[in-house]
Image (tube, rainbow, N blue to C red; front, side, top):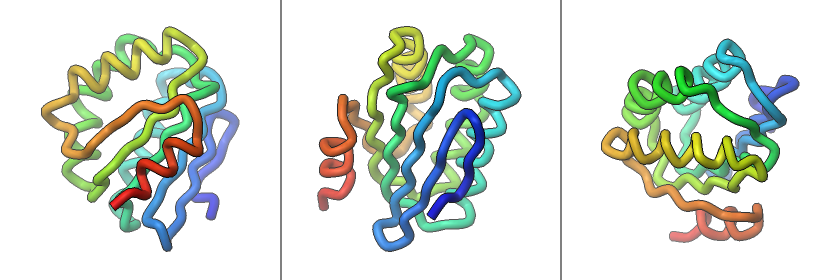
Length: 132
């Protein structure tokens, strides 16, 4: 089911698999980016979410101030509120997004309580999140 959708992202939720899929669509300014990540918090609070596939294929750069906000404020809340066990990230074609995501995960490493792996396609990401 579609949980949330706008010009920047599509978020779907599969209750049977306890799986969220996100598909970014281009650049999100600070307000859009933070709204979307806060929607993630709402989703993991409302629903049972064990698995997550973040499709960043078409995502663009994340501003440094938004990266810091993600690490300092958002990541600890997301990790504490949710039950996510596995997150598969489909790597962006945009090198600046890839670098930003790497930076966020590196800095937020202690706060993140779930296993995260990178993939270059959805089939491999899905197979991995559905294991065990």
